[in-house]
Image 1 (spheres, rainbow, N blue to C red):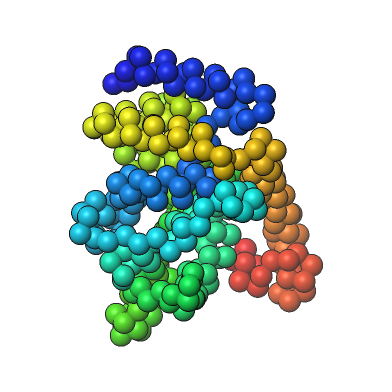
Image 2: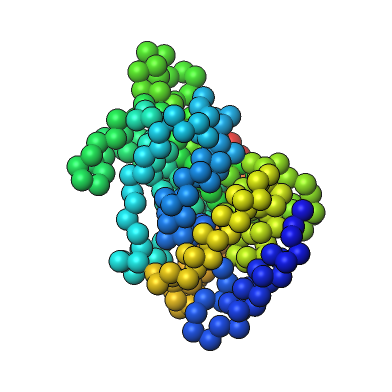
Length: 307
């Protein structure tokens, strides 16, 4: 249940941002790298809540127990580097020195996210990060929060790098290498367009992408039971928006343009592939060999065989 006095306060803050001549026109969401890192680094309690909501079923650990130690690997703040401000969320964590978590945002298609990130997630175990520190975590998990609006009909995608046919002794010695993709756009569509009730797990995805104080406050009232937690969350967001390292309006446009171009590019690629499939089907009818079909359509032999 929202508090009417607090709601009016946040409405005024949103209006102030909207009417601002020089500053930002909206509240920056936690999926912006500088906001996400700054917020979760200062508010570990909420980071633990978020990790529990997204990973408790994937990892045999309760993140809200403070005995489970969380260590940030990349804590550099964006106010000292303008290029960093233009990046989207990328947080690296180690839990209890044996679970590595890569928390990041992506605007690519689900298929591309899986293909491009599985090599990265393996490389993490042998990479030198920060001041020459080697990550020796056994379990490697990438939680990829996807905001590709062109695929809002796809909810989640999860995969283990090592399938069931991989040697058991190697799986036991290395642990899990898992990529989990969750589509924020899908749950926003269900909540705001279809008016469906969501679980706390999926409500948290809306929270980290909220771009207004009012919207954020209403979401928090649904998933947090403690009013003090809600107030603390809101006040931290207000403070971060008032700090001197917030993005300029021009830099926000750059971020929006990156996301827009990614969506357009993916749509074009889908269209190109559909044409290739049609051409391949016709060539198969004419009994053209696979290598020639692949050469002129850009499809792999494996994709052609499935046709």
